[in-house]
Length: 159
Image (cartoon, rainbow, N blue to C red; front, side, top):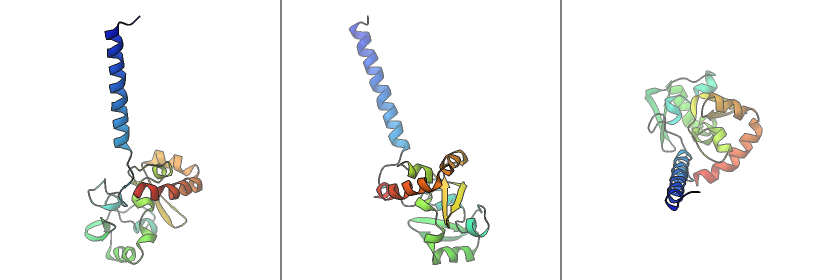
């Protein structure tokens, strides 16, 4: 049988552990009001500095040039060429990644996480990023359902 002191100390330890875990979890998952564009890889820069148009024109991630940029949705976007910058400027909805470049899997689950420019896929003309290639494999198991869920969750996460 535990003494009152031992019971009290055990209760305090459990409470502290629970509070710590809750705090860590709440810091890892974005709250509603998430910025529209993820800029956490390169501060203030969308898609980690990669050219969003290049995914469509080159079929691969291409680093943008620091000298060829455009401001859009509160972020700096970098491009590999002036032509790509101009294409984005003419139709940003076509080229900007879904969910502002946040992880498509995370958004489908009701939270946000970073989108990795190297874990990408174009589906029906839309660019999607995922947290990493492992998460991307999970997301790819049911892309239509995951996109549908993410489309429903995204407005709640950014309002």
